[in-house]
Structures are given as structure tokens and as C-alpha cells.
Length: 226
Image (cartoon, rainbow, N blue to C red; front, side, top):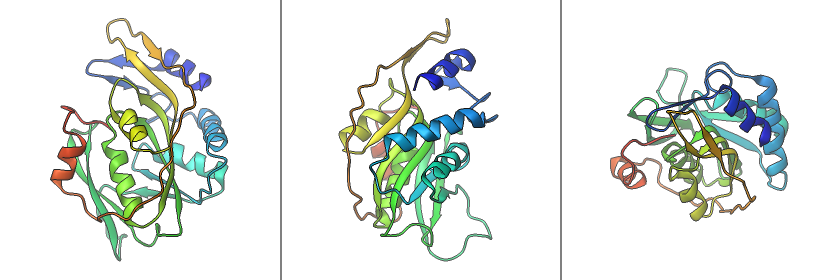
């Protein structure tokens, strides 16, 4: 998506250790006009899928997920990283490792809001190593629902998350894929996308993933990312 690439070039800041700072328009201050264009593009890309629910994870995925959901005319569910008194009943839970916070979170979704009747589009702002997406996929498949696709604003193509998801058959659409970035010069290289996608029906899965699951998902990654 050229509009997003141009905005990243203009306002993104490349930092050390593979960090791309886009908090002026994406994940702290949010440019809703840009989000609306991204939502329209994701609706176009997934127009053939029978999506009836959007799933994301708090907090930075919520803004873009809400706009995407408006284009699809469906509700958003966001996975919570902490139990609260407002959550009751049975839960799907998994554990994910966050690059941003440098720790493991328990992630929770009420069983009231995802079930076997759901066709889910997973949305997030960033894809690097894919540990958060693995957790969301596990929740969807544990519910007996179908992962119809994954929509990402910015994918770090030089990290393994996108390649792994595509090889496993998931339909993944990233609006901008950064294949290289230089913290000394600030230079960014974007991938020319060919539109190749895959698909995978949802499978039943375990409700909770343990530390061994995380270790397997992120074994090759010293600093796991979202």
C-alpha cells in the first residue's frame, strides 16, 4: 500500500535492534484518515472471505481493528493481557512473548465472544516474529472457529513471522513489508508485493499454551516480537 509506505518513509524513525518507531501516526497518536484507507484496502483484499468477526490484541491493535471492522460491518474482539473483575465465565487463554515489553503475557478471550460459528480476521499493527499472532491463532482454533485471514499494517520482512505463517498456509496480507532498514542512515527498503496468499481452515486446539509452546514458536529468535 503505497500511501502507508510513504507515511512510514516520512514519519517513521529507524532505531537500533530492529525497531521501527511509528508512534506519531500508528500506535500512540493515530491518524484515523490513514486508518480508514488501510481499512478499505483490507476490506478489498479479504472481500471474498465470509468474515463475521475481527480479533486483535490490546492495546495497539485495537485502533486499526476497529476501523477495519467498520468496513466489514462486524464486531471487534480484543484479547486482554490481564484478568479483571469485568471478565467472568469460561476463557480461552494462551501465553505470548512481547518484543515491546520484553516479557510473557497471559492473554485472555471470553468464550462468549468467539465460537465455532465464527469466521475470524485477525488484525494487528506489526508483524515481526509472530508470537502474538500464534497466540491469537491458537485461541481462534481452540474455539473451533476459522481463521479466514490475517491483516497486518506493517510487516518486518527481515524477521521470520510472515514467512512462517505463509508456509503454514495462513492467508496473510500485510499493507507494507519492510525488508531492510538502516538505523544509521534511516533508510528503509520495502518489498514489492506479488499478492501471493494462502488459506487454512480453523482446527480445534488446546485452550492453554505453556512455556514449551512459546519456546518452540520463538526458538530461533533471541528477542521475540509482535
